View 1 (tube, rainbow over the protein chains, first blue to last red):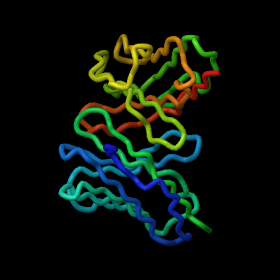
View 2 (view 1 turned 135 degrees about the vertical axis):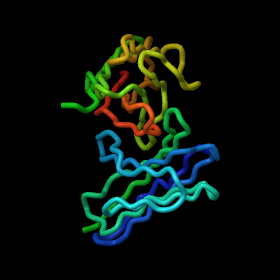
View 3 (view 1 turned 180 degrees about the horizontal axis):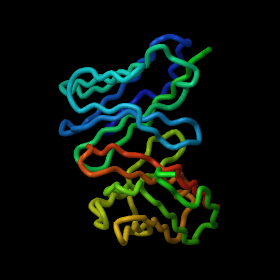
View 4 (view 1 turned 45 degrees about the horizontal axis):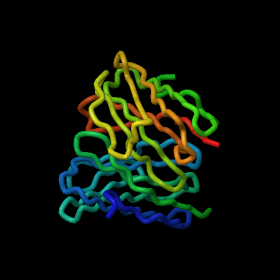
Length: 109
Length: 114
């Protein structure tokens, strides 16, 4: 079992729709949770982080954390073609982050 | 530019040669990380430093890999006797202490071993 699992996609949504990206993790001691966006040929860019159960909103992005289910999600509202990228889920417990393999999102104009 | 800087951007080498990469973190960041990423995969942890101390090294890292951060500022990653399987993007990231590992990545060094 991988430490951080994501569906590789591609997840295809029409422009203006809500994109929902999911991630599960295996280490119950994990304390911090991150979403990175990675455009093709570029390095990962931090877009959201969450430490406590519940929802955290920042602009069009909402991160959701459920520690009991070991589940993290990212919602992107009003998806734009510029959101087309790979989204990496990362999990930490006081040292280096462990990344999933990413979900490729395609937003169709 | 106040971001994480990596050099070179691209490196092509022949199997068996040694290569060295450099990373300059964001100046006020105490922690520095090295990751490796291959196509279709997420970044894979290699090692990290708190100031000049190397605090953790991945069990996947063979003894051909060595990293240093001599004065707690820039870091180098050396790969000795390169193999074709070492071909990957080598990413450096930094973070300030106490931010729950909020990492900021450099542009990476793309290594191709022929």
